[in-house]
Length: 444
Ligand code: NDP
Ligand code: 2IT
Image (cartoon, rainbow, N blue to C red; front, side, top):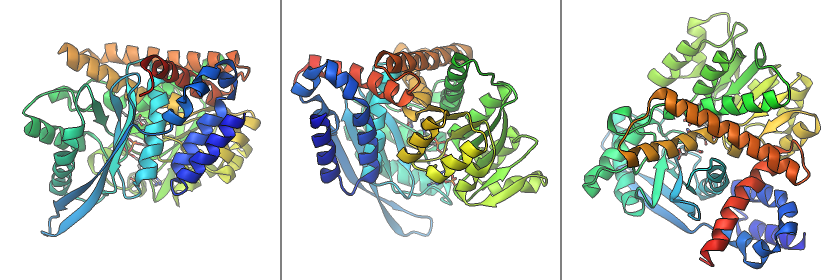
């Protein structure tokens, strides 16, 4: 379609230095031709031009003092991308690689992911180039307090509700929440992923990893495939990876490898969950330390080695573009059947194309990792009700949401003539809900 080609070129020109953002936008635009043919009103009303432009971007200075008494300065971001179906919602990422293009790509993905959950949440994302690795608790606290000293005036339970992402877990959310409450003199559910003592939801910590496996279960069942005794690898060893491992084990899948940004471990007896939790969640250590306790396991330098390990199921749960065409080729050569993304945009476009052409069931992150933000939505509901649901109740709702997302993605793909193409299914299903809301709300 000519309109799409013109828009794609203008996105590339306008955001030439934001490669991740352009990559995410082009993938969505490339999926939309079938729906735009049926609905020319989306083009006539400038939906595409509007949906690729954030409603608001906030960039701010974050000064703080390190343990040596030296002044440090980081850059803070919040991209409030789209509020058509609810308050901006999405995580905060603290990682040295964070820049505006990365936050925009994550915010853009979040619009469609949040729509797929069926809950009323718009899309947003934020973060900073602050690197929490090796920082003391005091340094992390002072950084979080400084970050919130600016962010607090832009967010609110009905406006914009941040949560965690890479480098932002329960510790950081606690410090951010404490500072927000102090500045506003108000207790509200302005953040999700909160501690259970002050308004957090059971299952939020587990939600992205558990949700990923519920999605995989729904998808594999639909294709008549058994989960039990399948061999899997999971990249990363953070929040998403750890709870993907836990649920995979419960479902009878044998996970043999995990990684961090330095390297990967292979344990043919199956990765020991309690040991990984001790090394990564409690000691905040490196994955290499696994060998100190399991000498039969092997360690390989470099985070991408994990894709050389033979497996039936691959679950990338670390970061964007961590799996490229070469990695996809070695996975397919090793007999890969299923790849589902716990991370956001971990697979490069060339790798996705290769996987799908070679018969791998491929589940894109905006569908497969939506369990985290969905449970954030459930945390917001509980905060509004001033109630706390049981673990079982939240887990049941999460599972239903993930099964419903899979069903919606699969049905949408089929309805538009692309059966089993979950990229097209997820992008169209997410897009239609947001686009229709934007049409109803007028040109804003
Ligand atoms: P964590 O900070 O808990 O863990 C991140 C993991 O990924 C760590 O093992 C880290 O290794 C590794 N990693 C990070 N950056 C790189 C890199 N550049 N190269 C190689 N490895 C890297 O983050 P989460 O588990 O929360 O997030 C993981 C992914 O899941 C991200 O893509 C995030 O956007 C996505 N996601 C998260 C959700 C959530 O609820 N938390 C929800 C949906 C998606 P190291 O320790 O060496 O840095
Ligand atoms: O990428 C994601 O969906 C998240 N980091 C979770 C966002 C949220 O608001 O819970």
